[in-house]
Image 1 (cartoon, rainbow, N blue to C red):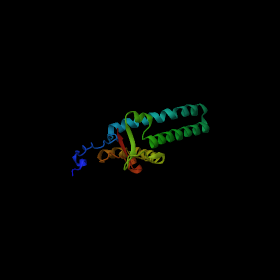
Image 2 (cartoon, rainbow, N blue to C red):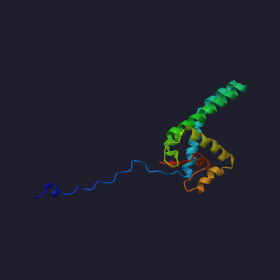
Image 3 (cartoon, rainbow, N blue to C red):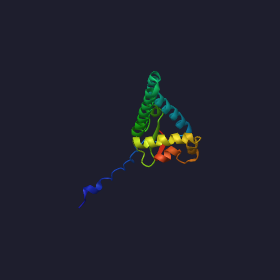
Image 4 (cartoon, helix red, strand yellow):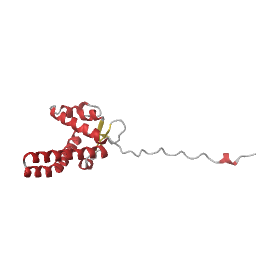
Length: 153
């Protein structure tokens, strides 16, 4: 007796699923430099109105207004970096800051840690920044402190 189910050919192999993740590479020194300039512009745009008011008011109150402006600018910077991987200007060139192990966004607290250590890197004759040139993942001191990598999308 013949079984008709054995007469059908086996199904064609299915193509391998495509990776939906975008291709990324560690950002070069040049791309990171441009992104740093964009971040500085963003910080200044937020801080300048406070500085103008502080100059008009003067004295201790003016100083306090300047400090408040700086705190707000840094918070906004860290919030965007932590929740979206970049400030809006940095994002336009596709340079993102992500977790070194799983590629997720790093959160505001780690973004703040990274920002503080970046200031120390700058004060140390830029050695913390230059160290990325011999690091295989192009990590600076502040990347290593916050366990991040910077990628170019």
